[in-house]
Image 1 (cartoon, rainbow, N blue to C red):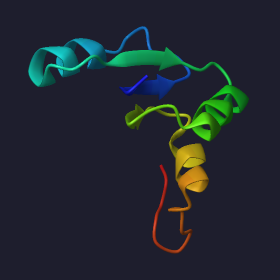
Image 2 (image 1 turned 180 degrees about the horizontal axis):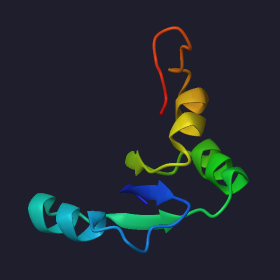
Image 3 (image 1 turned 90 degrees about the vertical axis):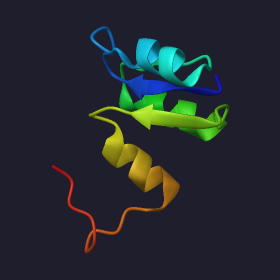
Image 4 (image 1 turned 60 degrees about the vertical axis):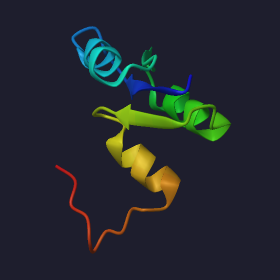
Amino acid sequence: MEYGLIGARLGHSYSKIIHEMLCGYHYDLCPLPTEEEARAFLTKRQFKAINVTIPYKKAVLLFTGLFFRSKIKLH
């Protein structure tokens, strides 16, 4: 996957349609039902860019090393 969306449930997402229509590149929806699957996906780094839905936003921030408790509040 080069570009796509990861999350626990993606059946409601219009991201694939929007990205492919407006940007002209292939965009994958990649449902990852568990946080362990999300971490495994991130560890492989087989993507150029991804969007992330809840509940994995915090996991991605921690994974990338950009999470600073004093600077970022997660809702």
